[in-house]
Length: 247
Image 1: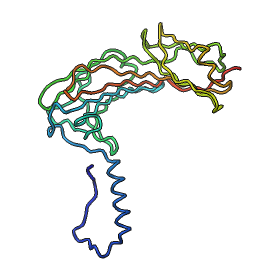
Image 2 (image 1 turned 90 degrees about the vertical axis):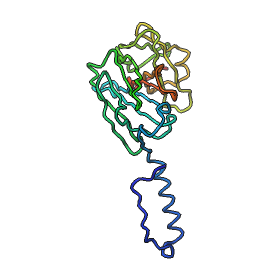
Image 3 (image 1 turned 180 degrees about the vertical axis):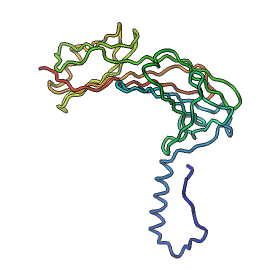
Image 4 (image 1 turned 90 degrees about the horizontal axis):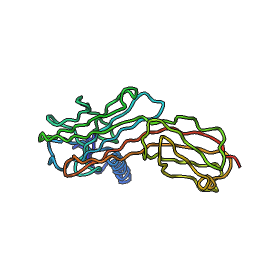
């Protein structure tokens, strides 16, 4: 790891530094090194060793969709890369500016209004050697069409959605407050914007207060990348609700 902001004076005298202080100082350096992501330049690496990671995130109720791109050297855990010209990343023809944090390193982040973002889009990564890698995708903001009732029977729980296609899936998690029964963590298959949790699953839960969470998690294929490959995830949080399971 690269240690940033740490300077050693050539005038330090060994005889005046207590060994325990040296150990403590070394431990602090290790902590800083483990938390500080490295940042490099794409011009300094083999173009085919660049790993591409795209992530689209949206939470129901927010007005903004986040589109994040990150490029790393030799795999997802490698050094994060700044795209030196002519390298760049574009969303629908518009360049995305670089950003960075200490923990995440260098990345590229675009903010789009959800009210106008539904539909087809294209990310285009241009490598330092000029090679273009196009990634088309479609975004549809998903949401519950009808609210979850304050009380649900053990016979079953229907869900009605909007913004989903047939055979899309929704990640469902239900936990109760008893601490003694099994929680539910499963994928719901959606048809005609509907899904159903049957009696067999609900019987795992203890009657009483429940927490229900719904998410839409997609892993999109990336057929057009460098030899190092990449990943594309779309994460939508539909919400979390409190309800009651009737006896």
